[in-house]
Image (cartoon, rainbow, N blue to C red):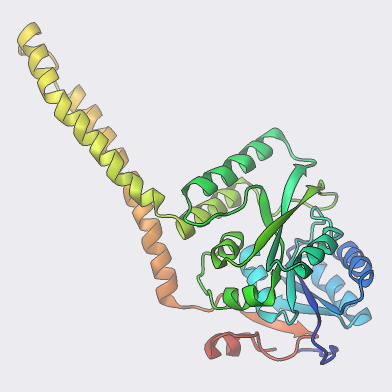
Amino acid sequence: MSISTSTTVKPRYSIVTPIYNEEGNVPRLYDRIRQVMDSQPDTWELIMVNDGSRDQSLIQMQEAAARDPRVKIINFARNFGHQIAVTAGIDYARGNAVVLIDADLQDPPEVILEMIERWKAGYEVVYAVRAERKGENWFKLFTAKLFYRVIYRITDVNIPLDTGDFRLMDERVVNVLRRMREHNRFIRGMTSWVGFRQTGVKYVREAREIGETKYPLRKMIRFAWDAVTGFSYFPLQIMIYFSFILGLIGILTIPVIAVLRIQYGPDFFGGQATTIVVLLLIGSFQLFFLFVLGQYVARIYDEARDRPLYVVASTIGVEGSPLALPQREQSLSENS
């Protein structure tokens, strides 16, 4: 059941943070954000999205909301994933500018003040650029750099290098994002696709002090795949190049084998070994390309089912339904 403690005054800034099993960080996150936002004169709200946490995160969020009516809580019925939790926060945000920040405090809340200055200077999107990443091993650093550069090369939008979801967005950008209801979401790519005036601020990403990363290698691969298939047709386009290469090899092989058999006799290249190897090679390419094609078809299937992106079990301090959503999704997001 919802507990409404919010005021009717529209906040200037909405801080959105998705939370999944962050019981050690929730109080620290609230204190840091409160100190930062209270150092400037404008009104603000903190929207915490509980993404099906199994620890004491929700209880700690409720305690913060009981002390401070500016803290709002959206409690999911189950775990829907980081990008969906961010989306829910955006849907419920009422501020003139919306800031996205993770709960692990690797992204320092103090950077928000610099983002605000850039926003007041006329930029609609201010994204944070990771100039340095502390506490990460060489493999994480290498794969992260590789990921951002591959995405930059093959996607159809200009996604800034070395940026995460930590960013400030003007209300006009947020309104466009609310209308984009695809299920396989890549928020930083969607923000770049929207356009408007964008700029970056550099910062040092701190090492995680409490808890474990919510993006192990398996999830990072899936996240990268969502980014590629959501903003690029490159995996489909390379099929034609491989087919041309294989066809060219086949065409060139015919005269080569003919000459070799004339020179060394008809038994040269005899037997089934060569045929089996060639068939296995071609078959592996075919299966790979069928997998790629199937991934795009699966995305179409997800959109055709038209299920809501998330289901809200309860809210605290939130007034009404999510903003600018279809009526069907609003009904599923009402307070229980």
